[in-house]
Image (tube, rainbow, N blue to C red):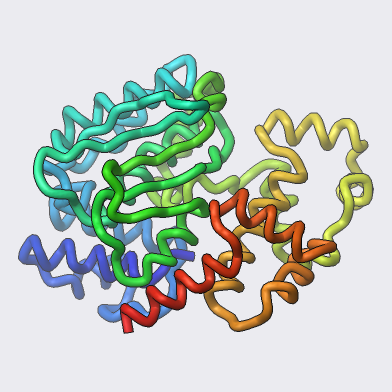
Length: 331
């Protein structure tokens, strides 16, 4: 689900362009005042409606408009790249020609691959940078058939209202007022081979941009089935790998091999769901951290602390205090 904050930011883009948000939101099947989270499909429909109304797929946030059809051409430009690194470089060159500003470069540093954004003038809004990251990250994840976990996301601009929504959206440490706008992930992913065809691109484009709004969702395949199964079950009742294989009626070795083909492991799937739940529960409840750790299936609070530090580069308590401070300032 997409936070209503992001819908508000889209409405602000329309107002700055002299357009009334109401009719555009209605075209996407949304009310003029959106107060609850919307689905990825609804936000994708809104994105298309705004692109048609503004004649710009980048919400009027670039140095020049990203004319409707540019996203499709971007996908064709990267389709036949041999590796993720080559695809990213092509995507960044395409977006530089299309948008002019901001522009991005791919840098490798200390085991990290960093997409660094450059502005010709003052920093843009967090929403502008987020939109750029969605385009680049969503397409490249689709190309290699797996979600690429982010290590951190930095913004040169100040925090928006409810900055915690940005942390939940990216599932990684997010920092504002930084020297550079950067999206970083492990450099080892750059060597991944691409795996898409013209036929699969046509299917991908039929569901865009909803399918990239949430950083490339696994809507099909074995990993998707496992995610759905785990989301419907409390973490404390999740089966071990051998039991899962029996439930799915798949031999253990075959299950492991099929997940690896999809670029997944059972542990990474569990960690991804636990991370999302941990962020949500810490931000939206006052339950003790020890209770949250237990509900997430951690045997000891210390194990949860170690895992959360790995996910978010800070302790659960520090994260909760930060969220409360931001909510207080916003209120």
